[in-house]
Image (cartoon, rainbow, N blue to C red; front, side, top):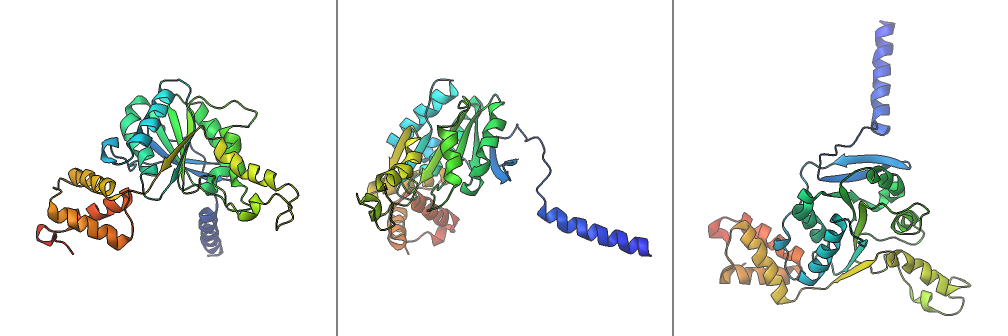
Length: 288
């Protein structure tokens, strides 16, 4: 009886320890098209995503200029020619992350793979890059909604990975990041003061240089702007076509009312409207 009780207690302890310990290191499933990187210490686990959220580039509206430059850069990368890391900044919901997801849909057959990395997992980025460098595929390391707060050291790993480390940059890895901040770091009026500033900084211009140094390491900057009504309705039209629905006068007015209720127009708002509109029964598709 004592042995049985001991074994039960040991099994209970092991179950609780298992919840805290990192998963066992295993070889990633290289057959996947998309992955999520999760840091564990200075290493991590590359988790495959069996059903990545992708769609065709033709589904995106009002970002033709940004799309053309991003596609050109990506094709250079896939063809083994020089290409740049990309920083996409600007208004929320205007298609920054959607463009990256659509690239996977268009170029997966050409060997493109997507690796999603959260800001909190950037410390393990050097190990990830070493893991990917040995592979024949072309990887885009995707950092969505990237920004750093004052005193956040995670950006240092990204700076080194982009440009500045002693090791040579891998030819099969690029970093594509999206952010609502052009320089990725908070900026203050005091940063522009040419004296000691309110914080007692002796060389305030060096503080500014430090803050912009990360965004400067992205070779290609793409800016995104709020949608006007025409661009918004074009996005609605695109998603309605995907859903097999027509853009009649009722749908058009309902879409405009939806944007008014949301207080803005963007590709995201257009997609959210179509989700609601397509989910209604036919007799429910009326202007609210």
